[in-house]
Length: 398
Image (tube, rainbow, N blue to C red; front, side, top):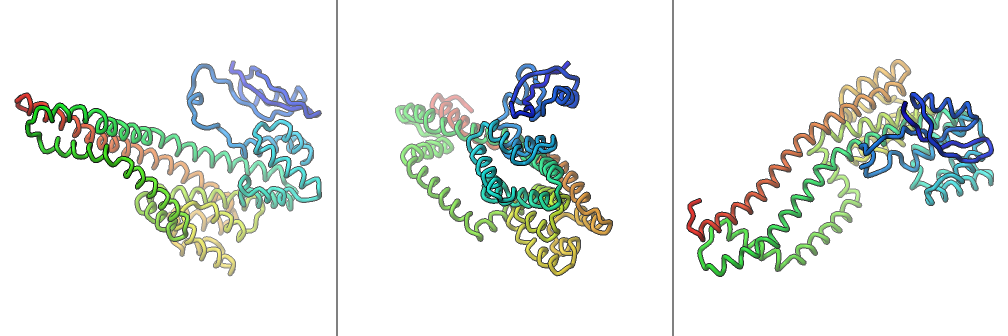
């Protein structure tokens, strides 16, 4: 029978942690509730070294943990200020503890929860704040937090998938570059001394390689300076509106399919979550536009918000903007006509997130052998150039 570690709290606010045996997570939750405690976190204990042991980041962000625990406490019937006070006592992250303290202080001074969150824009996005505000107005805070939690979990899962898919190519490139630098700057100079003592004419490829080695050894600081200066220049340029737009446009041309699927899933999930929480359509579209990471796609939505304000709905303006794929547009049109736009948007997001994972997998399957081939050719060129020089010295036919 699997074991589950848990973190729970009783009605007095005392936090306890432990491990219990249960058939599944649902049974473990029921066992804790029967013991008159509120489960904040339940996680199956994995035996041995699993995949999680080598994760580069935690499964949940601080915001996701905060949302999960707040939803659990409110759903158990505790008032908001009491729930926040409990979270203040059990939160381990110092930064998040300070945020909760400020939020709790604002609420006790008579402010609303959404206004208190708005004072911390680096932690709580406009999407998060508007959904909380909608929950306050409708009196359905628990439902809104549940939808927020679903949104955060889906976003985190997609982000983790992209992150894990890019780990191997990045390691491959870094390892290959370091290997080439070591060969050219440390190994090759030792052979250069031998070749110079022999006084024989070296093959052209070896001469080119030696010239590159001498240049790198003599001018490495200039190269480093140029790289650092170029990095700062690009960073400053990308902070400008024109630079960001041109860079995003280039990415869209190179990785159009992947980026469009990513932005479609991101936009539809955000818009669907906001509409389900009772946020008005125009405000929901504006907030969803802010979530878009590509400025080319985001700028194309400016006209859409203007036409929605004029009462033209959402399906036709989005279709006229020609931003998202045809399938998504057709599903949005059906959702608007049937009055189930929020449900349809979530379905679109699920569809394109699955499609995005397939596209990323396909892209990585092409990228990895391409990188291996490029690095192999570069290292092979260095090795063969050295061998040709050695064979020419010893008069061994190559």
